[in-house]
Image 1: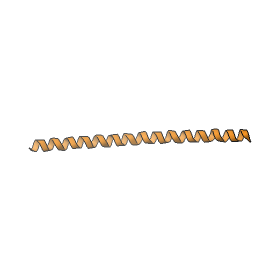
Image 2: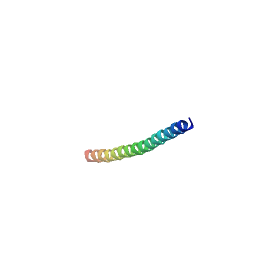
Image 3: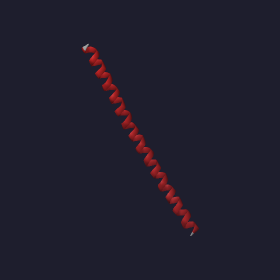
Image 4: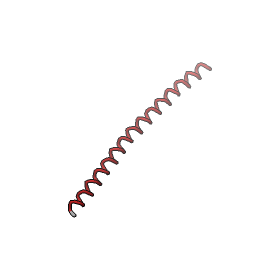
Length: 56
């Protein structure tokens, strides 16, 4: 009985730690995606600015 409870606790702990790892990795991926989007937007702004200055 005690062994089963410990097994359940350790399994839950494993699942929770895996979820936390996935979330932290997802945050890193999200941060990467956001920074890439910001980079693209800033490049697009530069291109837009160049295009406007060329038109003017």
